Amino acid sequence: MAVADDARRAWAALATILLSDEQHDRFIETCRALSLPHPGALKLLLQLDVGESPTMGDAARQMNCDASYITALVDALEDRGLAVRRVDATDRRVKMVDLTESGRDAQAQALELLSEPSPRMNRLSAAETRTLARLLDKLADG
Amino acid sequence: MAVADDARRAWAALATILLSDEQHDRFIETCRALSLPHPGALKLLLQLDVGESPTMGDAARQMNCDASYITALVDALEDRGLAVRRVDATDRRVKMVDLTESGRDAQAQALELLSEPSPRMNRLSAAETRTLARLLDKLADG
DNA sequence: TATTGTTATACTCTATAACTATA
DNA sequence: TATAGTTATAGAGTATAACAATA
Image (tube, rainbow over all chains, first blue to last red; front, side):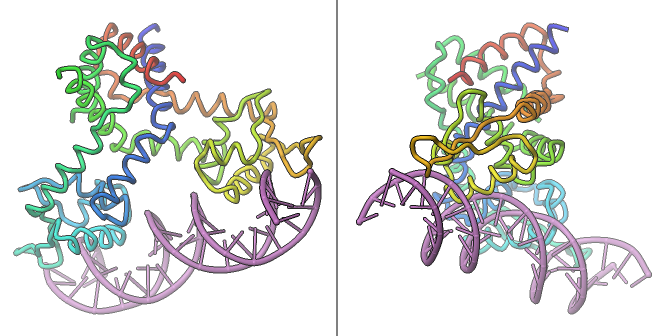
């Protein structure tokens, strides 16, 4: 059961880092930098992709929130020109959310800010840092 | 600059995992399991330690929130018998927050739930899992 | 009649301001 | 008068319920 123990230890450490609020604060700062009012709007922005426009409903499921809130979030993105609604040609009840060019730029800027490593990372050697990056990549993918 | 790149890659992956909401959902579930109404109450509970009772003000600073909210959080913990207020003998304006026996149990239970590894961890080999645990431990400490 | 998205409304979490007790 | 904590109140963020348009 050593693997399970290590896995648990790893996840506990992850939870600790999360609870330290560093990432949470970073997220809030990033919202401000992009003048997005809701944290949810940033999260939605990060989930959009050119050529892969979800419907409002899709977005709600992806974000695990109510459809009415997606309305507010897309309103916020639209107000800032980061996304636009597009009515489905075949079923006019349905609306797609398209990422705009500015939206793509904003996304890149957000990722830049969110990826800024914590000072904690200085505790690791160069080799350790590389190893950690490789392992976390595996976990994050998909 | 390879180290900086690796560090950035690692932190980006961490942000992705965080954004997946797995840990956030876990946190909410843990709140429910302990019937704690506010997420803040769980966070405060996890920061308390036997023999290391912070004052209300200390707790507010640690939690990076307003003193009035600490009042609500400690109320919640007290209602459930997880903590008690104790008036400072020398300055009767000051109150300490003591973790109770039940509080300690609840803490352990919460850590148990929060440390439950994500299915993502199955993507790593036993050796990788061990390495990851070691590296994250280094980051989480302190 | 059922479904997509919106609007109106209410609830939860957190902060600000006014207050009480002690120093 | 200043400080620690509390109470009352207001503000963000999110959900629920009623609604409009389309199917």
